[in-house]
Length: 264
Image (cartoon, rainbow, N blue to C red; front, top):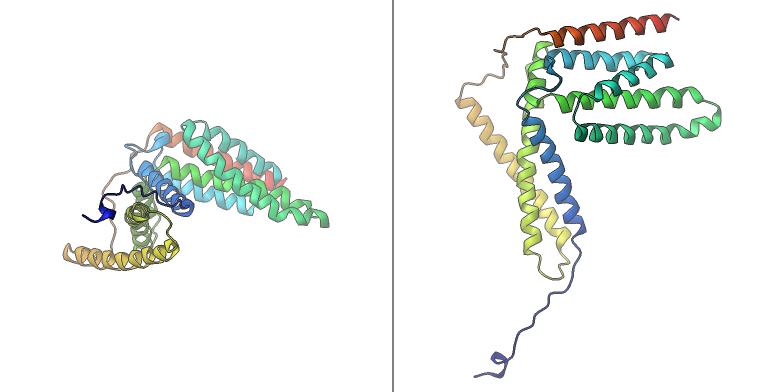
């Protein structure tokens, strides 16, 4: 019997860094968990009709954009923070983190203008950005994706825009799961020191492109076979509740405050 067969094998693989792969996995898990959470709501939060929420959120963003009154911007920020208290603690934390991060980035970008004596921009644009991001995030966290697309249909938005929005969200989820499995496979098959990890990631990207092309062709064939003509229809009747009435009254008051402060 050869001597090498009698020796014990104590193979210890050389250590390697998987920081990039781990961060990619964590980021994908974060995106997928948010999509699952928003798609898993049994009922829309805040008990307000999604059409009203989408319409008044857009209106609020427009009013913030054209407003020149610092008092109105502060008023909207106070209103949004008060409305934010109606959500869950986890959602409040996520929304505030995003809003403060974007507002801080805006503040840093506009900071050089202060040295030239332009205080107006940094005092107005920063709270406007904070309020806009907060309002959009509140809509996103309190309303299901399909309810948002249904609400967009109520405003006579072209069907091609709704189709792109709806399909994009679903494709992000499906391709995210597919890429997550490929990253797991890459990590499990990387034993010891692997210097070709980044080369493998380019292969993952290429496979993702081919997979997305195949999925697009399959989806087109399936929709064509089922008689889809590109037209979206709403079959759900709009029910007007007390919460909807209160929501409309609040935003009518916001419009009145906007007109009053802009004239002052």
